[in-house]
Length: 511
Image 1 (spheres, rainbow, N blue to C red):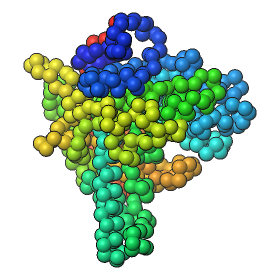
Image 2: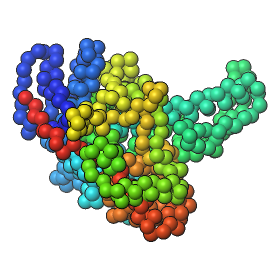
Image 3: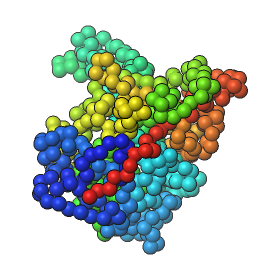
């Protein structure tokens, strides 16, 4: 288990927080389930310690190679436990098509990092790791969806931005409702969040006492009608790290969370309670607090890597070409987060679940909004705290703190969906969003995570840019209109956006 430039208490030592006894185990063994009740005890006793415990536990779960005794895999049928091909043709008792929740693909792996591995653990995946999914159980290979693996770094900032932007959009809708109730006249409200336009929403009063308003949502753009920004999943179908993780665990690993299926054996492998509520909390905290992507320029400024004058000049020119071509209109270089505290469960009503997917109350499983595991995105990330040549330490894992106590998030996304043209369309619209509609993918770390696009079929960043169409056609054409030298500079700027791990960090073994 690697921790870059920082030492912290082992999971095993903290796992006996209540019992006060020493336990040892082999690293080859699967990590023990995480107890949400223990996490809550630790939050009450020492919130910082609870965060480190959850982070380390999530680290172990992410790196673990699970076995059938823990519930990895599923009863696919035909004596199969794993499959890379969706099998809706297997309709017998307990077979693939009968699994609950309805299976999209897989299971196809025994660990998270077997797919999230480029350029390092928790990273992206090569095309050999692409997965096929069949959400509608069509059973036609020509209509299967192909998905490439995305990196998992710094996802806490992504969720927090989505939470704040959702709140801004919903407050604008609520203000419109109040105006229409007061005036009695129809009205329209433009929707914006963090400088990004999401179209408009209209309203008219249909009853006066008590006031009732009918909304016209036809003008909303790039987000669902409920105005909840869902930044996770290739189609933007999940609002939270937690929801995305339990779906991925089910589909890719065949490990079903208690909060997803309860005590049932929904994949008919003879194992229940495969991932605890505490496991999901630990996994969410771990991915939320992973180090942020950085850039070669930033690393060179700290003396961590060498960057020649011409390389630096090309990156600077490429950043300007990126702006001139209009790429930054969707791949917004940076956004400001007002409150940098991430917490699990979330305090936002659309991001912190009251009722879990299995129908239980979240509170009954120890998920208390008033008692979250939390950390500061500008200070607390354990990884990539790096000692420089002069002896000072820089926390390259944390985001830059703004003067007013917020966080500057360089994520290169506008967090909204766009129609991207036929070259980037799925063969079928499986989610009701649009076959060619995608949320703007982040460019943070893009220089380290090729191949690119949803199916990994772009082997160069040039190919990925040229494949853009639809709402991005103008920027693509502007890129193609650049000189060959300027296009090379723009690609150099993108290649400068990297994922970095301290190569001098020492491996730590649990006692």
